[in-house]
Image 1 (cartoon, one colour):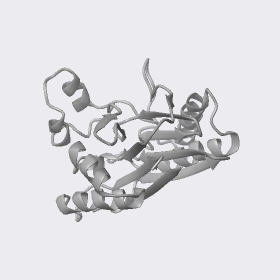
Image 2 (spheres, helix red, strand yellow):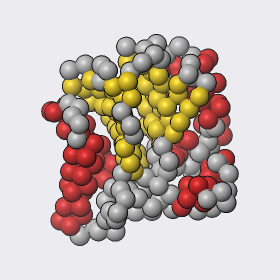
Image 3 (cartoon, rainbow, N blue to C red):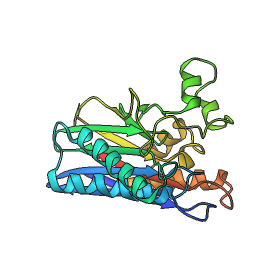
Image 4 (cartoon, rainbow, N blue to C red):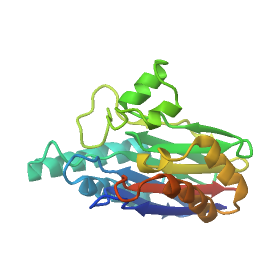
Length: 243
């Protein structure tokens, strides 16, 4: 059983540069979340193009062993071509997080500072994707703490995204996990995870019985802390498996 819910909110910005979507192929599911880079023109174009391309690829072909490579590389190529056509090489950039759940397996991939959280061991433990950002590097080196990532002055400096030339490193892929027992996932843009801590995510998960209720409970915390007259767009996809 896969229970999911998703939302996206413009926040205090004139344009919502986030984009979320879900695709299915047979009984398999693909969840996609993008955050067009703020400060770059047409971030909303980049996020919609990339997300819809990945979703359509999954609807057509489903999950294969090279799905993530095909999805990320072809979406990147498509975005770079559009930049060239419109002469906007310094614009149209976006993060990308993709979660695939089949009848037997779970796996994900990401680029940028949008996150995927996986909650396991009855929701008492978690792991998350590592941001491709300046502040994540500082955290990895021990110069700042995990919590300081949320408030650091350089937290918006993203190092790897869709729409920028890739160097030796680009997107990261997870290991393939077996669908065994209860699992929960939350995909979030930085406009969401900056305002809620991991323990609170787990507390909200424990207090709710559906993906929709889990999302709304976390969203209540975010909205109570964020100044919605000027805060960033925010988006989240909640997925509960085996509940």
